[in-house]
Length: 282
Image 1 (cartoon, rainbow, N blue to C red):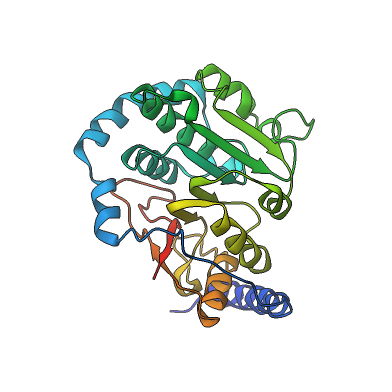
Image 2: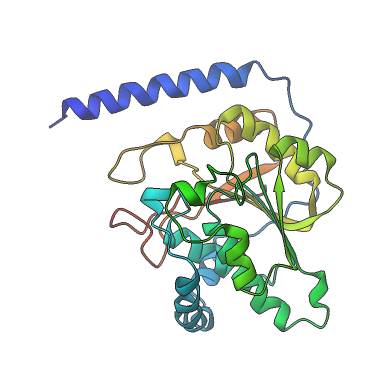
């Protein structure tokens, strides 16, 4: 039986998609270079997410992280607990040393990436070579209306990073993603795009992010909804990332997306589904 609320939700999403498509279509064609993009496959992703040693490690470290930060994703807009865990597994399993995050918000994903990098650098003979840069268009730490204050959290992202002993390895940048990526002269093993999710912005971010990758680097998208269908019971859809990638593919970009789909642990709304997706070379 189709409910009125379902029809209204579908109509609202259709309007949003059409509006995003109209803005996206007015952008000039992007120049894209995928030569540095890695070719991770679904099998390797599954091995990462089911690694027994990481599972044992997580059970211990998750308790330590929970003592530092208490984030209820539905209230603060932070990345949900299951996605944070997936980020931790990726950074640990791939021994990533240089990570860029676009979209800090309350620092939920930032802190979990930093926690994984902390374990990585402890085993590295050159720990000073590890760095996480997290970029947000607003001041996420000191502004009176910073997200952590609005969400009722006890500490800013930077204060939590300091409590973790990672302050020397994490840099907070207040800037737009496009301005930062255009001016940046660093390169990264992983770039996590979780900022402005509009189609027009993601379409412009992806080519710039690809230029900032190290050899065989990875691009990780958040809020990627395959076929722009709801993933959870709230029926919400963020159409931008899919629309942006579809245009890039139509324009012969040598990329494909691997949605992570269902994780081996809960994410949100009594589900284990995630909107995380890896952009890899085709």
